Amino acid sequence: MPAKEPRMNKNVRRLLDWLGCGLALIGIVFVAFRIKDYSSRISLSQITPADWFSILALALLYGLANLLPASSWQKLLAQFGVYTTRWWAIRVYGVSQLAKYIPGNIFHLAGRQATGMSAGVSGGILVKTTFWELGLFTVSGALYGWLVLPLLLTGFPLPLSICLWAGMVLLVAYLLHQIIGREVAVSFFMEVLFLAFSGGMFAALLALIGGGSEIHLQTWLLIGGAYIIAWLAGFITPGAPAGLGIREMVLLLLLKGFVNEADLLMAVLSGRLITVTGDLLFFVSSFLIPKKLCIVDNHEGSQ
Image 1: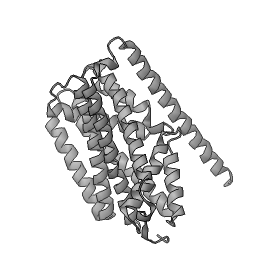
Image 2 (image 1 turned 90 degrees about the horizontal axis):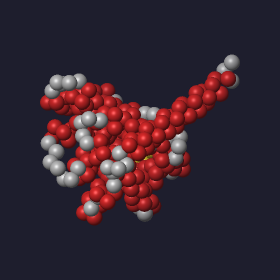
Image 3 (image 1 turned 60 degrees about the vertical axis):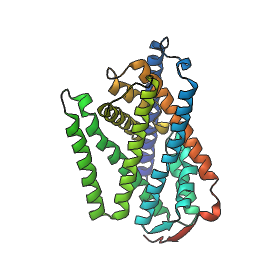
């Protein structure tokens, strides 16, 4: 009987991967049909050279923002007794991260695990940091759900949503600091900031595509919160490469009727272009970091 358990676990993992890939495919088809419905109103010609420059600038900023999750991972390593230079953490994180676009959505984690172990870091500690990273990102993303309550519940006051979000972020950070340690709390804050930047980036992109029309702060928060919840849906879906299809489908469902759908579709497509380009730039920059700067200063494999 015990010998059959690993096989069962493997089958379950395979089923989840297939389920995730299936959901991703459904999401892609859903978005494709929405684009088809609005094809007469969506045209790349409406994006001016100045807009393309702004999109490129957003991609560069997104690539730079990837320093936050990389540094967050370094903090988790430190929490478990592995001390590295920031350059080492950035290089390992950035070089492996591009593999998240491979179907299965685990190859970037496997690559990071292999690279870390080759540098002498305990495999057990690397697994711990991976689970903590996934858990903290899930919690960080879920907390932004407070910001989308006004989209789901008519009349729910946005100021209350903001207070609930901020209060929960501070509470989680405090509990992590008291129960686990300072490094994990800092790691959590970095992930919260990265998601905030991602949501703000999408809101800025939507304003850009909408012709530079003014978007009030409340609208920015709602759009940004919706983007982060959509990102979370893709993030927790097993097998979906970088949440492809899932993120776009959830975003369209959340913001339908709140913003012009043709502009929303264009922003969804442009947003994916920005994140892929930003990840690619981060990958190249990380790869070019000299190895002499990438040092594991001290590690305790027994932890």
